[in-house]
Length: 184
Image 1 (cartoon, rainbow, N blue to C red):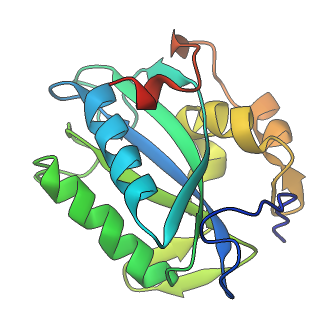
Image 2: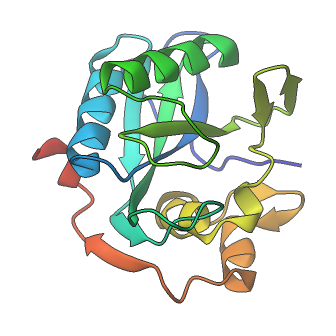
């Protein structure tokens, strides 16, 4: 069960069907913080998306494939009128614009954007699963998500509770300013 405690009126707030989606962003090639900032700015510039909150920026060790550079990670809450599949298409387009190449699973990348949550929805499609199926196992997702959505729940547990059980000892704060993405 998912619950989203936010009710915010904004540029998409008066449109029927607006949903709060939680996105996870990361990268470890080039200037990943700049790539994430550009993606967030591009999302916020759209009429059908409003970036409501962005976490602090974290430096995290690689996950899955360990022989690569550390990642930078952040999460964002985006209020959108886009359908889940359309939001995924926008995210994939932003990754391509930042020269993302999909050569190996969990390999290095300039930018990765995952839809972690989409309102209270559970989605199982060929190319989209929401909640993200591994989000509760990944401290690099839970740490930044807890900055902006600590009380959101996944499978009847809050993000904060999931984080308390995660191994986050090697995650470091890269930028404590939640407006880091507006300054790049």
